[in-house]
Structure formats: C-alpha cells, structure tokens
Image 1 (spheres, rainbow, N blue to C red):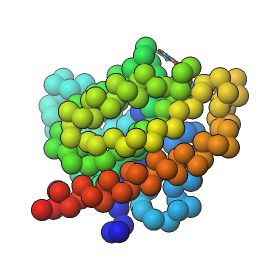
Image 2: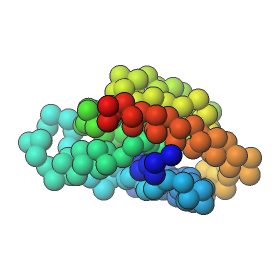
Image 3: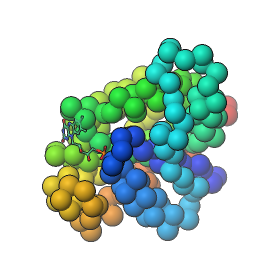
Image 4: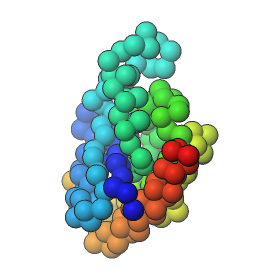
Length: 182
Ligand SMILES: Cc1cc2nc3c(=O)[nH]c(=O)nc-3n(C[C@H](O)[C@H](O)[C@H](O)COP(=O)(O)O)c2cc1C
C-alpha cells in the first residue's frame, strides 16, 4: 500500500477545548503503526472566515484548501455541541469542496453519549462532500473517559477500536486514491 497522508482534524476551537488531548492520543496510537503519515490538523490555526463573509483570498482559507488537497484521508475528532458538530467544524467543511471529494474518513467522538449524535450528523454532511466514512467509530464518554470532564483518561479497551478505525480508514483512503488519479 502506498504511504498515505492522513489528517487528524480537531473539530473544536474554543478556549479550554478537550480536542487536542484526544487528537494527540489518536496520533500517538497511529504513529506507532508507522504505516502512514499522520498529522494533527487544527482548524483554529487557519482563522477561517465564515463562508461568504470574507474576500475568499484570506491566507488561512488558501492554506486550508492546500492542506486538505495534500491529504488522502481524515480522522475527525468530533465533540457534541447541541446534538451536532461545532459551528467551527461545519464552517471548515463548507469552506472547501473538491478538496474533500473521493477520500475516506474515520470518526472519533466524545460527549455525554459518546458524541454519537454529532458523529451521525457528520456522516450525512461528509456523504454530500463525497467523503466515505468507515464503520468503526470509537465513542468516548465525557463522564468516564475524562477525569472531571477535563483530563482525558481513556479506558484501555478504546485502543483496539481506534486501531480498527485506522485500518478501515487506510484501506478506503488507499482505494479512493485510485479513483482520484484515474
Ligand atoms: C455549546 C455546547 C453545547 C453542548 N452540547 C452538548 C450536547 O448536546 N451533548 C453532549 O453530550 N455534550 C454537549 N456539550 C458538552 C461537550 O460535549 C463537552 O463540553 C466537550 O468537552 C466539548 O468539546 P471540546 O472540549 O473539545 O470543546 C456541549 C458543550 C458546549 C460548549
């Protein structure tokens, strides 16, 4: 299998967010595999304007497009806000189109019910963007996988399922690369 570039996208941008802890944990598991280039992609770094409110030429917007273009697949770190994804992630998704197409993604979510409702919303959005989401979906509980809902302390059993999610994401990312290059 050709070495793929996989972006681990942090879905939240608020001050005090937990997503970097979760993203870094996923990246550490992924890096140990040594089978792809994994990188954290932090939406907050891009300072994306709300869609249609800027000039369309903001450096962050151009950098966002270039970053997505360089990636073969994604792992979304998703947190549940009002039963859905964050506004920041939705805006980041809306702020590109072709750059997402014909790629694969895994989802790791967290919240009071493991972020499941947000993750299912995300699957629908990604379908419209021609991103194929894999079946394996690790769900983390804000009550039991975080101490005091703040410090990430995941149960051991999650690691195996992260591995399954990565296996599936790599398999489909590789398959869809052939679609993009044919
Ligand atoms: C605006 C807002 C709405 C939220 N709504 C939900 C919700 O509907 N369901 C849920 O399980 N958690 C909800 N939460 C709790 C978040 O899942 C939790 O705070 C989580 O840490 C947010 O991710 P972050 O720390 O990366 O920003 C909400 C949090 C915020 C800030």
